[in-house]
Length: 106
Image (cartoon, rainbow, N blue to C red; front, side, top):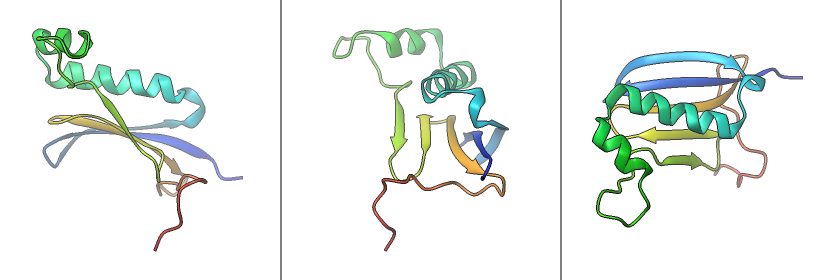
């Protein structure tokens, strides 16, 4: 059976600023979502931007700086704009695994 990992990477523009690989069982997807939000907050947001990210949607101070997006075809989560962080499920060779329910590649 193939061993799987989370590869967490942070970028400032196209420059890699952080990378860590951990066993897949160390984090649930929900925990990884929160971790990415924390990393984005620490690395690039002001206090005001963090408050806005947690504000009720549609209000004057609300923003989407901590929204986490998921790529369906590959188990990858992304958060932030610049800097931004991404977490992908990879195999022991470092290859991002394809989601079993994703449509076939053309």
